[in-house]
Image (cartoon, rainbow, N blue to C red; front, side, top):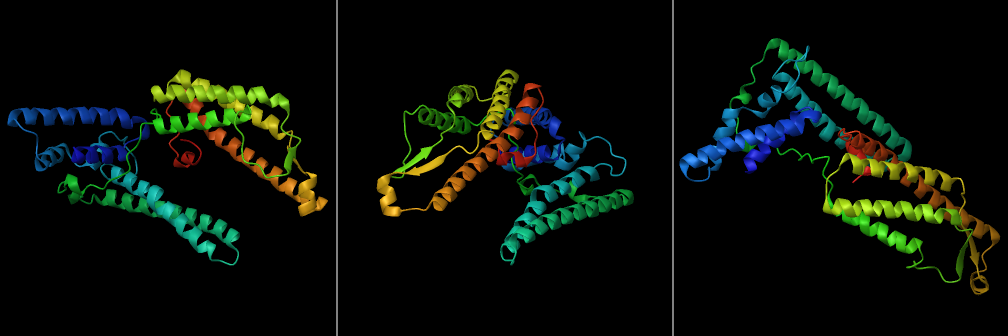
Length: 333
């Protein structure tokens, strides 16, 4: 079934995102039914060339996708489906490649940070230029009614392997297990059941206020319970998304309250360490500043990771599909 899966996956890549699953389910059911009928007539499974002949009869993926695309004023079908494919190549291949190349080149410049910022601007400008050029090209092709002969003379085995689009409502069990185990370890540490390695003769002072103990414990326990449920029922429901949305909002509020109590830690060396190291008050102050600043940056990163997750959970709770921007994968599972 590799040819069929590649065929359907390529069509999915060209379809409007909100209609992909329904259309692919319909096409898959129809094609598999036709294959089953032919296998029943032949009394054996179909060979690869017979599967390919069936797919050719159904039509090139660009033509099939065009049946489900809305009519466009500037670029008609089947050019519009090919135009969408070209834009996605710019988005998923050329633009990331420009960013990577620009970052590598910037690393060898005398001033890498300004060079990196400039490379990002250059990549965006180049991508926009390519989009404009591709748009003009397809408008001209459509006006000239150029014959696309490859739409008739094609082979399913020659179709490119595009990335498989995962169902946004499914939850990876590995992610749920990792989240559950991580939160369990955190809760055990938070309650003092397990400790972390400490430097000898070094003591942290001015710990996080006691008023944060129970709110942090309750929020961690609530999310751990959600991970446990997702482990056995790995798909999103509106109620489960609403529950995590509540956890998200409470967590953001707690992080904001915690940030107001910064700085959190002071450092004290006991007499034994002081006799060996004899650090100056300035050195201790710098060390405290580094520790507290590192923790504040970590808190900020955590807060930023909860913002897109909150938006995703809000959409799921409202019965809408989550945002498809791949940048969310930097923060979300």
